[in-house]
Length: 156
Image: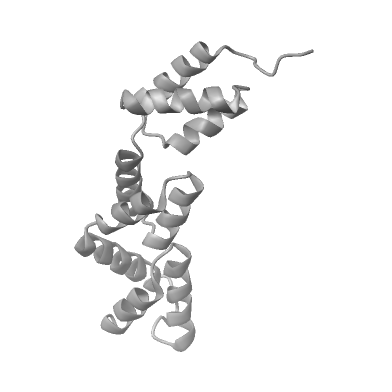
């Protein structure tokens, strides 16, 4: 019978430790990587637990860093950040905590900057069609509809 493993659990743990030393990763991401390497689920869970105890993995730290970076550099809204964290298997309470921890003033400033930048590319940004295009753009980036509407009304 052919073995499922292509590498040993010790080799897999060493790879994951090296990966986590270079960048933040969630426990869900590491679990998926271990399973793709052919590590059995119970062994993978043990490796993730060990790495968490030794602070190679910290979902809270990951969620906060991810949310901050996506807001600041990718210019994503809370909804898109929350969905991405959910797909990375971060627990919902940690997602909520990371989103609550975002700087509200900076968040609104980023939203206004995106709207202003797009406004200059539209032929008629103050028409119904122009405002609709602006709304759809920032909504697709994950910003909340009520916040978008408030910023659009303020910038008229």
